[in-house]
Image 1 (tube, rainbow, N blue to C red):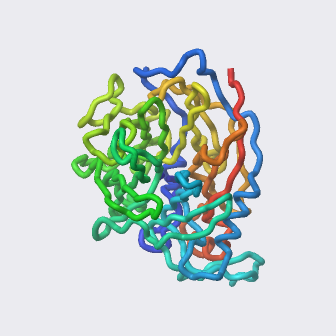
Image 2 (spheres, rainbow, N blue to C red):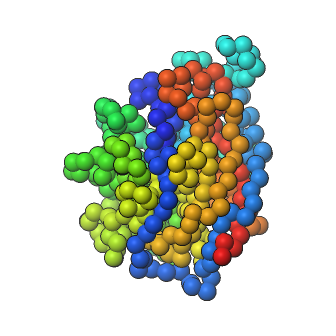
Length: 408
């Protein structure tokens, strides 16, 4: 889960997933990595072409606009997905609007569907899709707050054995725990990474385990939350994350990677962190991407594996980061990363709108095509609540389909 420009009000509408962090998704650098994929299969990769995925974008609009129920999803950000063994797709969202959507015109007299200003908002939600059609919002929030003034945002998830080698499968969902704080921590202070275990097929929350507690790190900007993206390879799950350097004035944030043996995501003792030289448990991870000054990455990025190449998608640096997605590639999960490669600017609703949180969805991809979602939100915090309530085209995921090419 899991990040990027100041549009979410901490106690008001809860709009946007860490926009300030994604706007810090700039250039990447890396330390030499210990592990390498097959050199013969690894080659430079970049976005060769892209197109709007109107079907997926329209499906979320159809479901969100349906007024038959008042306790289901009408909009949210985060937009992570995982394929279940029975073929269903589980979509996970961070701050989420429930309630009803009204037909146009909206209160400003414009012809756009709208939400009530007091629409219910929860910190997380989950929606089920079958055969490309959204069917059901699970009781929300799916993951209750861990304590007063704290909340959980779900990020990446995967289906894995209940324990290494076990036949029984469960869904593991990585969670970010944040705690209410004062400026500049208007999105909450990063607190911990947790992993929830969901039963199959009923998706009941069996347990939540804290796997990486950051409360002992005095400087909140140095705290690392993991789970913005997962990559499974060779019996390991690689878990990427980032720090919150941007809220305190550092130009960029840094990125980190952990690994867990398959079936071990819910076991804190199974987690190992890349230190810059080796994998080790119980140590502070070393940044694999970013020098904290000129180069770095926001916390809401996505990594996929294309043949022998790891491809990373993030928002571009500078003002282009409001609208533009870029990519990098590596032969190893620990880097070094090469790029940036070709940028592209997906379509946005009119007005002062920002894009953030690019997330790849390999379970929807195939035939040389890769599906990527991005979230959209109103940029200016002063009127973000009114804009998001007045136009449901905001605060819903949008989709594009990419084709990668040789970047050499």
